[in-house]
Amino acid sequence: MSISSKFMGFDIKSPIVIGSCGLTANVENLKKMEAAGAGAVILKSLFEEQITQEMNVNVKVYSANFSGYPEAYNYIQEHTKGQAIEKYIKLIKDAKASLNIPVIASINCITASEWLPFVKTVEESGADGIELNMFILPSDINLSHEDIERLYEDIIHIIKRATSLPISLKISSYFSSLTRFAQKISWMGITNLNIFNRFYQSDINIDTFETVPVDIKSNHHELYNTIRWTAILSEAIRCDLTAGNGVHKPEDVIKLLLAGADTVQVVSVLYDEGVDFIINANNKLKEWMKEKGYSSINQFKGKLSIKDNKNASAFHRVQFMKYYSGIE
Ligand SMILES: Cc1cc2nc3c(=O)[nH]c(=O)nc-3n(C[C@H](O)[C@H](O)[C@H](O)COP(=O)(O)O)c2cc1C
Image 1: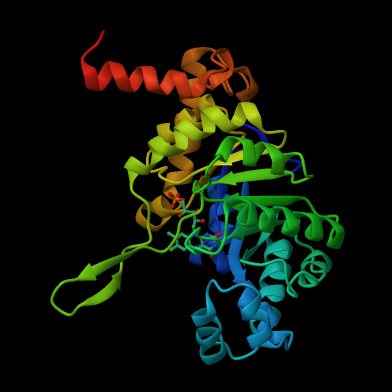
Image 2: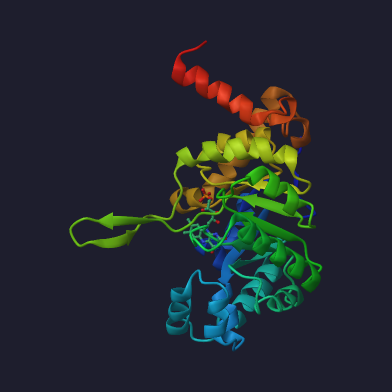
């Protein structure tokens, strides 16, 4: 029996991919993840603002191009000591020297801007691929959905010209037509789509009248949104699909594979349970496959996607009516 899968053009020994986070910024952690059976790792993201600042871009001109996050520049200017790129390149090289599984670099970006030449540096430092976490919250009233989608497309176009490395795009679910958009970008030469990233959440303190950060980790309930979109998108796109956001139990990995994911991303649960989760999830997958008589993931991957029901929105509405109207 084999639990191997495909990720960004690589054959990987387990469908579990460790998503970008603070834990993947440390080579000792990465080694433990590999030893526990992870299929691939995505390094902690380097932020576009860190790259552009170190490339001596005129920050004011740059931020005026996209009115989204000017406060990020101030933060970066105050808090980086100008060695972010150097440190990141060292992380890639050290990880590559220590691991046998694919090592994917990650860039968190909001524009198709001067940071793009940096991908050549990533390629030269030996990374096996690049993931772009595009942090574009559709909050700007001046941007239409076409503007936002064009931004994604521009970035893909340009990065495809800048590197021959396989590219994974990590997106949120905030699109007015997620299926159509995902299909379109999957035709543009990306190797993998990763659903979903998370935006930082804020709460409000009613005594101090301040906004306060909420724990960034996911909860298990978020898995259901991921299952739905995995079942839908896996049938619509023409690249590999990594699904995550809300994976907290070993059986969640099996669920997302059944929904059609090629690989499953885990992050929050590693903060809670450590690398034991990887061991448990791989074991659970093997036990379940044995019990059901499967010898490879391909034999059941996508078995519960929407393939046999092309009209997914109608399907969901019917379920909704049954549940809320009592019509059986
Ligand atoms: C502490 C923490 C740090 C994260 N840092 C990054 C990051 O640097 N880049 C990125 O693309 N995603 C980052 N993420 C998002 C995760 O990669 C992942 O998309 C998200 O947490 C959903 O997966 P999960 O439910 O398994 O946590 C971070 C998540 C957490 C919890």
